[in-house]
Length: 454
Length: 179
Ligand SMILES: Cc1cc2nc3c(=O)[nH]c(=O)nc-3n(C[C@H](O)[C@H](O)[C@H](O)COP(=O)(O)O)c2cc1C
Ligand code: SF4
Ligand code: FES
Image (cartoon, rainbow over all chains, first blue to last red; front, side, top):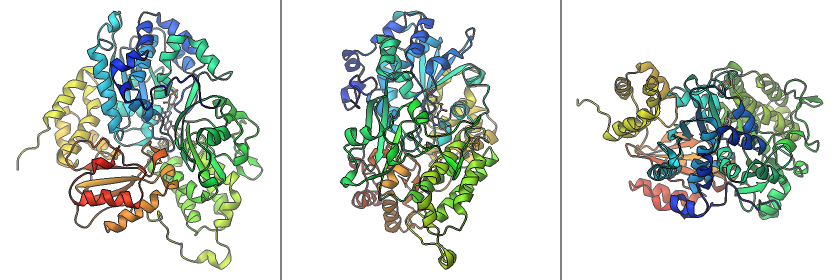
């Protein structure tokens, strides 16, 4: 069964009443929070560790392990929920925020108990104006009932939750940039280490977790880490929320089992490709993740499988030369943010890559030279190829620029631009080559087409 | 010239957020929310607004300026009365966003992917992913000097875009078309 039978984070989607605290409680809500506030913090942390919950924001890092990095003797610890969702192709967190705001609040109460947090923040994308109103209203309801504020649920625990709104900058989704922004400055990433769990917001230990990650915490407290782990695979507990866009019959947000393959997702969950056409490529986790070919879709769309399954080709810099992730590790793809982009056989892959690179260049914060200059260079070469004015050697040039960015920047935005470039070139090399005019045609003026005028 | 003054809503916001942050950090923290609200109150953030915010929060104007120019939702340039922001990123592009954008530009006599109609009424911008990729092409609308319009305009095609532009040209936001 690809669609999860046990729905943890999407159970209340499409139910407009669930936003109201009374309806939320009638459907079992705030049971976990009531339990958590009377539990020993270490006990909650142990359950989360046992649950095999992995971060849903992009890196898939085990949440319990991250929490374990917070120094035990810290006087102040902050929890920051990353609700900046802006990785192209990703629209799952926005669904949780809009349909089930109390689920997030309840998860935050559980996490705050485990981490001894008294002030927690939700860093919310500025463009999410509808969601801001919904979540703020839910917070007001929770305060009114005594579920937030002083001595919550009559326990010894105090907790304030505050929304902080971003104002249009993709880079603020990167956790250290997010903290710079939340401190009231420009959203500039910082070098790690120190990691936020040790030195984060206002210099204090800070846990930054994605919306969906935290939304799972209530279930773990209520049913135990083992029950959550049992739903998943060996090293990834629970279910996964995927947002699917592009050329499928039914795009949308779906909670699926960790075992669900790309093909099952497209065929069974999303009703197949529109108009009976064939699939050409699938990006499994937001545009920064390497694209998959049709014959690579029988792999579960889960953290470990997407990284390691040998049915997925390794990304190359040039034919025969594998891209080195560091320490000799190679790159296949990754689960990333759960944003699945499905492209059918009519898609021009050179246009797709150009648009992705246009995005990363636009959003580079400009602090590191390889990223600032490199993304600019990438987009100009990708653009001339896409619009029919490429030059001989441009494919090799693109690959070399990407290889020069990867691994040489402060934050992962540099890799996020380099990886898809190399993956598109590895897998659709002939299409890129074919787009480059040969001989005399090469010196003619570029065609103008919709979108070229940027 | 009357002196600029931050609105009561902004003062309320400052009062609400103040106790939620460490006393020695809160002025800087408030810089972004106050700038955003000021951008709505005054229609854009120019040098006078930067100085006003800097003075109110006791921050160096250079810091406030740096923040104002970093975030795209803080309007520092001239925009029309309505700002129509169309996502052309991958999900929306696959659904025809560039055709919709070109259609808008043509109807409003705008040349570039960011520009204002000759009558100064509507600014059109190509924007990045709005986290609604399955329902594209998607757009958002802002009205100068007005609070947030908490709606997305989804599944746009030329016909739906025409309805939106007609409404904007009549001076109103077609809220009935949004979700
Ligand atoms: C360029 C960039 C953008 C990111 N954007 C987001 C985002 O919008 N939302 C998110 O949750 N994580 C995002 N991340 C990942 C965060 O840095 C961080 O790993 C995550 O919030 C941790 O939460 P998790 O462990 O629960 O996944 C981004 C990372 C990078 C490098
Ligand atoms: S990699 Fe790019 S976005 Fe990240 S810090 Fe460097 S310049 Fe900024
Ligand atoms: S690509 Fe347009 S909303 Fe995501």
